[in-house]
Amino acid sequence: MLENWLQKLKPASLKNRLFLAFLLLIILPFSVLQIRNHVEVKTLYEKRISEQNQYQLNHMKQTMEQIKSDMLLTSLQIEKERAILDVLPALEQNIESEMREAINELFIRIKGGLYPGGESLNYVLSDLKGRLYTSYEEFPEESYSQFMGEGQVSKLLETKESFLWEYNNAYDMLDTNTPVIALYTLFMDANQEPIGLLRVSFDYRQWLKKNIGQFLIQNNYYLLDHNGEIRYQSAPNGTLTANIGSIVNEQNLRRGPGYVVDKSTSTIINSSRITSMNWNIVSQFPLEVFFGDIRAMNRQFFVTFFVFTILFIVITLFILSAIISPLMLMRRNMSNIIEKNFKTRIPTDRYKGEILDIAVSFNNMTEDLNKMVARLKMEERQKEAIRFQMLLQQMNPHFLINTLNTLKWNVLSRGDEASADICIALGKLLETSLNSDVDLIYLKDELELVEAYATIQNFRFDHRFEVNYLYEEEFKFALVPKLSLQPLVENAIQHGLANVKVGGIITIRIYEQARSMIVEIEDNGCGLAAVKKDLNRKRKPIGLKNIKERLSLLYKENAKLELLGLEHGTLVRMQIPLLIAKPYE
Image 1: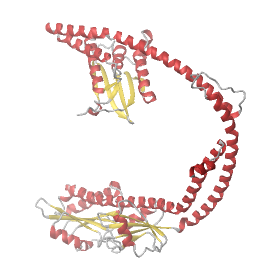
Image 2: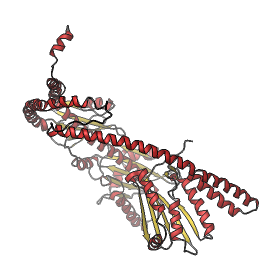
Image 3: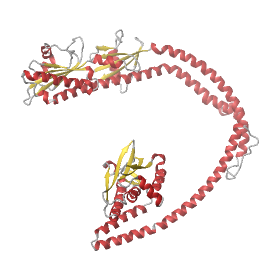
Image 4: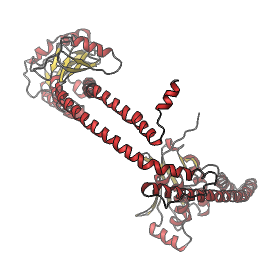
């Protein structure tokens, strides 16, 4: 009974069915989605702002962690300055000025950009003999007793530990109202006796004030220590919620970054934990900044949405009425296409506009399909003929290889090793030409073919040239087109070095550039002008043309072959995609 009721509700005409489909599948879901988006727009804004805030907090956290690492690195670097540390225990007055100048130059070099955030770091070095060296421009001499009286200094001298951190009770040497993060390092001599102390201090308030102003979204930022006390806040009049400790702990326990909307202060709160210090960086974004814009935007959106929905319904009904009628007529004419093997046409004299274009396109499609079927049949016949010819042509190279092997053993039996080497090299070239199943081979195999060819040519030209190979071991298993380098070396010998009596050099240089492998073959022969003259006088450059066509077939526009003239010689540069396929071990 329910099925009969649904059948009665189902529209009978195609136009009404399409309209119902548009209504149920487009208009109704779109309306529900937009209403849902309206409800969730506030949450979406909060999430996006929170993500940006979290990114900024994580950036500050990572930078502070990096600065802490840099503080340790600079202390290690100063400890390696043996020329300074070796004279720290000395009492000679004549070297004090030189020492002070050398240490000041070291501090200036470190603060001047050796590490990021170096301008917020200050250094104090003591020699335990009453002398103090600092990176401050003006520093009172009587501060030596103040420095030696610091708790961490006494602890280092007592325990003789390498270094100690102080986060809570360290202050700037010139301003006791400015808290800092301090690293104390104890320097020892060869007998493990203290000879000096180094204090590296980080003015995190100055650094935070400078970096917060560069962020895209301006918030109120707070730095909380392990007790939840505020160490720094960017806005003097900012108010932090009373339960910030529990909020931060809750966020630290989450596996991913999260945010909390604090209704008491009407703000979005994000935090990031500085693990090495057990401190937290907190951002507080006021929601009032964007609430007004959201309400106005939502009002304008709903008015526009309802207007466009009504227009969409009217236009949809009009388009459906104009399309359905001629389509039904065309469907009857197209039903016999398969039965007639695409050899049918739709009459075009009764259609106009887009329907006429569809009919013409269909007729063109059937004609193109008929031509394509005929072309495929012709190409299949041609492929069979080419395959047959290739099988025939492989007979002669096999005979040549067998003949070369016979010659090799014959000349070896006579003690002629040079002729045997030529037979081996020529056999390797012929075997590679027979392997028609692969287009790409390892670079090391291609270079072996080049070496085999060079061996033959060197014997022919009485060792007038040598071949140098410049490439990294990692390129040995890079894939290159088979027999792509040998023709280039052949051109360098035939056209560049044929007339060189002695000292001919061919350099094969392989390197990576912009994720591509560059292969350069350079000779010190007669130059590009003489090569072109030689090519015009003799046969056409089949080798270069063949390589260019193969590169185009294999790599399309991602490969390039260039012939460049040098002051002494010619350079051929081939660029192909870098493909490395190391064999399985």
